[in-house]
Image (cartoon, rainbow, N blue to C red):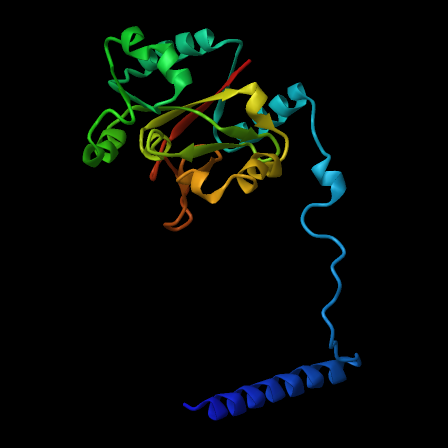
Length: 238
C-alpha cells in the first residue's frame, strides 16, 4: 500500500472511532472528553512511601503472611544457631543431598564438614550442563535471601553465575535464611535499589517466593509441591 492509502485508512478509522465515542456520550447525556485527564500523582502516595513498621512488627507480619501461604518460620539469634538448626533438620528429614548457593555467608557455615552423611554441593561446583539435574535431585535447597517483605510475606532472591535460580526452584525443600535487617515493610523498599542499579550490573533474575509451590490447574484441585519445593522454611536470623 502507498502512504496515501494508509493515511486515508487511518483517517477513516479515526472518524469511525470519533462517531462511536460521540454516540455513547450522546446516549449518556455527557460531553465528549477531548483532553487527557490530569493525574496529579504518580506511583505510590507519600503516606505509603513513608509507611515503615518497627522491626518486631515487621517480623510478626511477615511470619503471619508467610504462614498463611503454607510456609514455616524459624526465629534464631545467630548464624551459628542457623547452622545447628539446618544440620538437625537435614538429619530429621534424612536428606542425602543439600544444594546451596555460592554465598559468603553459606561458605562460612562449613556445612560440608557438619553434614558428613549428606552430599553438600555449592551451585557453581558441578559442570554447567549438570547443575539443573543436580538441583532436581536435591532434597534441600539453601539460600540467603536478598530481601524479604513483611506486607506480602515474600522472599526476594536474585540469580547470577554464582547463584542459580534452580537452587530455590527445584529441590524438594527450601531453607531460606533471612537476616532480619533485610526484612522490609513494603515491596517498593526491596525494588527501589534495583531502579538505581546500572543495567550492566543488574542480576540475571529477580525471583519472589511466597510459600511452597502450589498448583490448581487441573479441576481446581490444589496440589502442593508439583513445580517446586513443597516445604519451605524462612529462617529469621538476628
